Amino acid sequence: MRRFAQVALAGCLVIAAGAARADETKFLKSFKGNFAGKGTVQVTTDVPNVGVSCSFKSNATSTSLSLDGNCRGLILVTRAISARLKVSGGKYSGVYVGSRTGPAQLNGSRSGNAINLAIRWAKEVNGDRTAQLTVQKNGADGIVLTVVDRDPQTGKSVVTSRIDLRRS
Image (cartoon, rainbow, N blue to C red; front, side, top):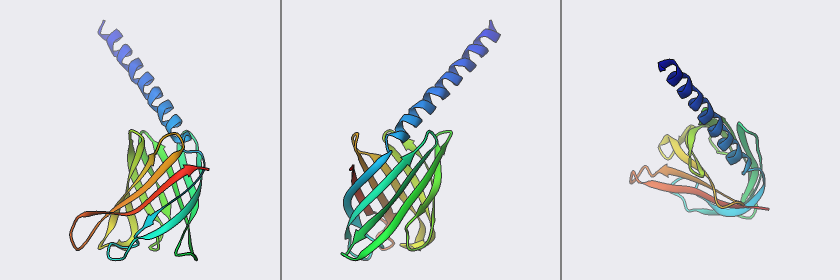
């Protein structure tokens, strides 16, 4: 009887792991497509926000998500931006390219309709090398990208970037 209970429990865990993987696959693939939108970017906490217009192409598989795009601000300034994420066992990791400090490391996990990632900048930004990036689904056709950093003057969290994208 004990052996049966162990086998039954193991079977339930395998089924649950398969269901979680299927759920992650569906979630990741919902990001696939072309997106465009607007937002604001604040390079450091001591300078004003700059309005930006962005366009991204997103590709997704059962174990990865990539966002490649451009954001334009101040009429002539354009910056290429990309993020490459891989998921394994519910943990996300990858690289963000587009920061003036160089490629940044990303690590985190999903909570509901959002991927919450710790950023490790290549060099100090706002007095340290850490910030938070959230990649959040907004309905069936939207994505919100939000970066939160710490203001070195006040110690408070500040939204330094928020870009609202819609499937185009």
